[in-house]
Length: 261
Image (cartoon, rainbow, N blue to C red):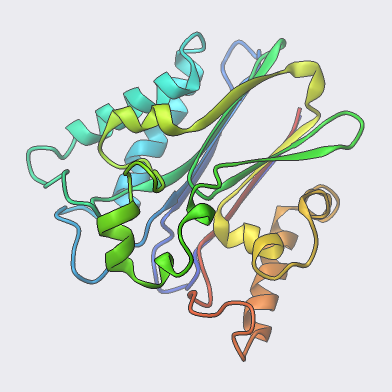
């Protein structure tokens, strides 16, 4: 098995709000990966005493433990339990009903000799490569389906679309959101490699249009996860006219986890 993890903050003087891990059980049978992208809060506050990195570390740690220790619980159940545990850690001190309470996108994958399970919530991505080289992107595209211009105003997104029907969902305080994730199971024989990416890394495809998903996975496989992040950073710096980035922040936290099964 070959595994690579690269996670880099968007700016060196700001904490990385992403989380990444790979768990390998002591039995040597199978494993799991976890990738979270913490949602940067607005200046107006979140109703919470804790930072986004605190939240992603707590949630990511719980997911890493539970995916390995509870192999018979489906990933949606794992996410639900991890959210309940994380919420309980600060429910007495924080307003978890606030629409911008700390939250994150989620990618989970867990493999055994027989199957590969997956779960994707919000706009991070999981790429699956088959033995014949075919690459499938497993995505939760609800954010892309919002009405045109909706993302231009944080107030509109917060009040109308976030974690609501007809909008998009993130892992925040409510364990029930796990039912909203894109999830499924593949035969182990159908999967040769996996790559989980936060949207700071998927910019290479989705923002800068440097290639498609198979091209993206090829960069990671042949040059390494660091090479993909380095390419994104170069493109961000080169986009001085903001032709591609538009109103988006110039540099975002970028995480890539690659596993050859």
